Image 1 (cartoon, one colour):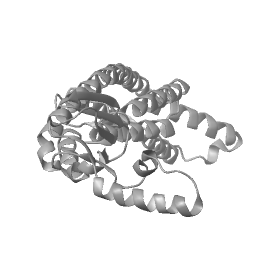
Image 2: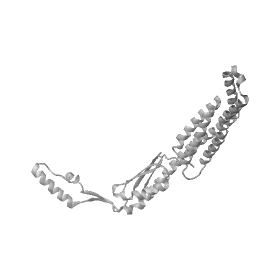
Image 3: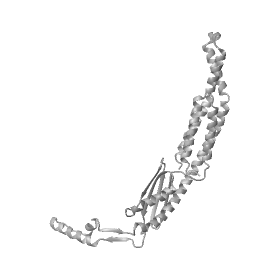
Image 4: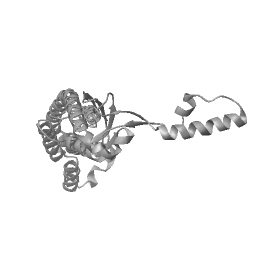
Length: 287
């Protein structure tokens, strides 16, 4: 089943809150934000996300929402606080003013959060991250299911167009030949005696052959079938493959349009291009 690159997942486990947001991106770009004292865990966290995500821009935010260990508490550096306090009182005596505990508290190094070692927190964070990834994956699958339904309907429309084009193409060579004959007869009406009918027939046949779109329509239907099959893949990323197939479909439709000598066929080509662009917009969301 195709998965969207867009999604959101979150989890609250062991005192950690994890949010994962994904948006479209040509490649895989994973960014992990952790509390400063746990920054050493960024690489293993990114590795876990990388195993679960194939493409897209992914932002992972991990925050501490409660004590993640019984030993965690606020620690006061009393020795440093006394030194700061003496210095502040000396300055107040010289310049005037009063010193209170808030002045000391605002200085760096007085308060520090006493936490367990980062490596000791990894198991807790990994559990929270794993649960958030499950939520994220489910959201992407749900969105991918909507994309699949829309794309499949448009692929079916393209397939019907391809068959209709094939029916019209059977008469195109004759239409082109008759039109060329009529134009030549109008231009050379007074010189019919000098026209080499055999050579004319050869030239008409050659030009009619160049306007033939049988091969393009065969390839077009084959590519549409390939896209149809790609959308049935049950596992793994399909975004790049479907994008490539769609490029081939677009190329064949453009060639048919350049060779078309029938107005109805030209209108179908325009409608086909419209459907292709709508499919392309949806495929850009697929992982």
